[in-house]
Image (tube, rainbow, N blue to C red; front, side, top):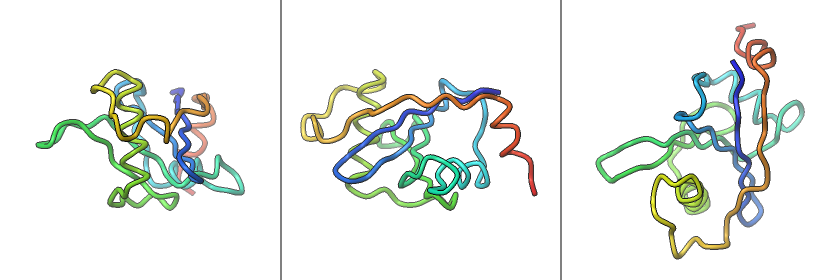
Amino acid sequence: MDAILLKYHTEDKDYLIYDIRKNRMQLDERMMRTICSRNFGLGTEGILVGPLNSRNGIGMKLYLPDGREAQQEENDLEVSGQYLSDAGYCSPQENAAGRSYMTGKIFLPGEFMGKIAVSA
């Protein structure tokens, strides 16, 4: 199954966005490690996965390059908010305007995704 990720940049950090409403595959730790790897993959700070509904509204989860879930910090929240706004999931955030932005769209073919999904 093909996957599409978006790459966002803020200050000196890059993040990948994996929209679960636009992709059918569920990413696991191994896939996240491979995709984020600086030697083999795209070399980012992590993958933001969502949108997810919560008591506080809509948001995203951050997964670090090693596949572990982490608490979002300022830059992560800024990118999450910018993507959710860009994708039309929520209204634009005034304080984040211009500080984070999309730098590219990444298409990962199903053949590649299948290979990295197979356990070693």
